[in-house]
Image (cartoon, rainbow, N blue to C red; front, side):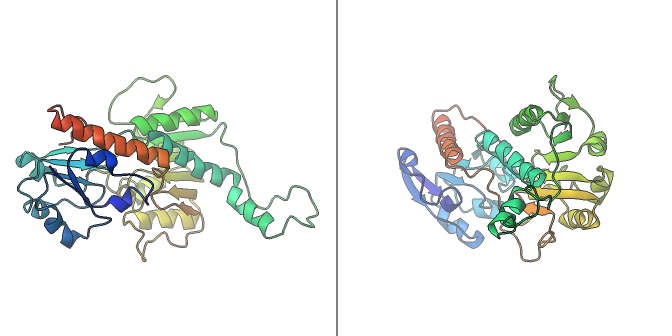
Length: 315
């Protein structure tokens, strides 16, 4: 069996081994694959494993033997599912592997904004505490999380993990989700009510036609003055120009983003230089333990498919 990995570099910098995949067949792993290279590289493949490589109908037409696409990701918007469904190609994603890491990252960013740790680290590193006339210089305004209202958009595995941490900090947790659920630790409300009540809004929904640009000028206008916006889901749920406007106007206190509409960041991204916008380069899922778990899940998915019992199938 011929297995082609199109973007192995997006999963590892050399700290993961291909051994577990090589047990399934002949593996060809490309560090990265440009769109114009994809068709030629997968043309003889029985199995394609990828993270973000676009698998369009035009590309997939070049691979007559292809029967399986395994994703090193939870999201699957890079796959033409209409084509794969019509041609009997099974697509399986890797959901749940990054739950704890992403929830951790949400609060790493929120705590940085609340306690201003980087600002105070820089203050002391530059020598400003030496010779200060007070032992606790109040240079940067801080705030407590306890007693604040935390709003979660989407209540899958990551949303639930984030809610658990928010509750541990003594925050009131609101949740807006399409799927009715019962959970006494949170209050389920509609989208507009959540925006109007939450001091922090954190997004944990997939990118779909319905959620694209969900956070636009109208949505930001409904948020509380001084609220914080966090997005670790997909950049496409946010109108970045609208976010810049509400940050620069002071309507929102700050934003923390691990994802952008264009990745890597485009040179003309509207959020470049916005001082109250904390941006990390899509690394919430990057801890080694998280990526080891991801690789194991990709192997489990492939094994289940070969055994005739596919799991984590997306259609």
